[in-house]
Length: 141
Image (tube, rainbow, N blue to C red; front, side, top):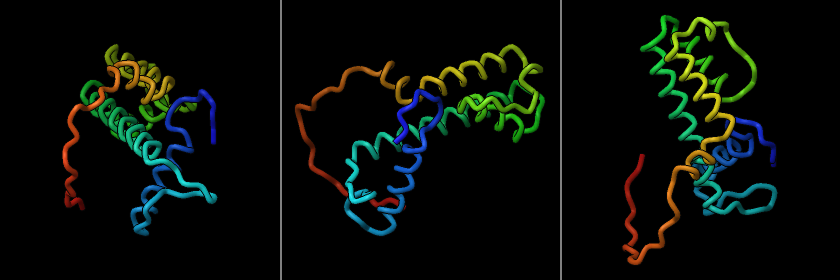
């Protein structure tokens, strides 16, 4: 599993998401790979990281469409490139408005630190529940 400090979503996080989907489709009880069972809290954490990352990318892309005069696909490419610091660009960054440059800078910062690190930094300590409610199955689909 990668342990680097590179930004964006790690390949192991993305793999856990794919394994979770496979586990649900095949109606298995646990996420498994190479004869090992992955704890559900790791799987949930991977889901939250991917969801937060996608939310950030689409929110910034939407805001950039309001402030910039460029095609959406170009804006989306610049936003993803800023979040996952790969050094690619389509050349619109120098021509962005001041608000657009700030959005790209914040996206680069969030992508470099990682969504989970930022969420943990702004969240409060885990509270232990004094009451445990009964479990309820919800129809999803």
